[in-house]
Length: 411
Image (cartoon, rainbow, N blue to C red; front, top):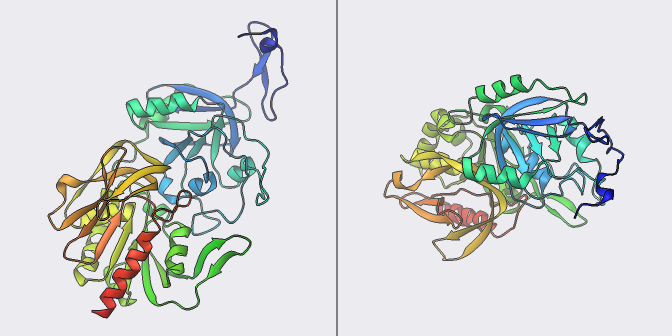
């Protein structure tokens, strides 16, 4: 029902200019736009950095963990639309960042929100999301009908777009449309060089505990070398918690350099971009590691790298999988787990060789979610078992990796 109050002039929210309407009342002036490659223009209100960036628009269905999502290097090159309307309400802090370097950018190109960000309401908060986004160079837009944008993505796929934030509210829309059309998209794009570590380093931090914070591994039983394609901190923490000395190496490390470290196991991390493009230099390295018989575990991009290394192919997905509520069936046990996912490419099971056994499958769309080699101690999953954010159903995979390492050392 429309009432007289609905048409009453209202004071603009902080940071929003007002402009007169034809009916005589004032309405907020847009200070941000999201321009899709098909020419669609969505107006809203800017938060975060005043910037103009191009990327691929995806949607994420998680209702918690926005700070972890926005610092996940796997999102490099993407503009994230949160389907949950209340983002930013618990503020941000220095403990929930997932990039290995606390100061490094994750590569996220922008953030799209439904409602304006409220003041933080959490005892761990140290900064408002708006200020945090500014500091990390991420532009954002609020006031968008994210349900409609999500429906568009479901129907038409993930569009290329430009997100622009300007406090003055002045935009050259035609230029932004041209920029969105010209952006090449993620197919064929290797984004790993922008998020991998520059040098080798050790890791001993373990997982967070209530009123204790993060711990440290001081009595490791195994040595794991983690190849960093854009690794998340919580993955390394779970490896350390499982009893591992962890050595992180850059994505461009050679097989000889990795094997010279005498690892008991090799971990292949998550990461952004087109796996086929990264595979140009990563696949030969992984093949050599697999041939040596060293236990190997991959997740997300690491899973796709293993798929490519054994002769399979990867394909671009229509809308991708992004969220913390994705059901996956473990075909080796018959159990269903709720998982955290973030990928826009998938391994094509029809191209896998006979020795690559499918171990997990997505119950949303039936896509491949895990493989294991029948003749080598190698396995991988498409989702994020470290669950940051997300449920902890899949932590068992780290135990499975440690068990595999133990059997190999005992043989």
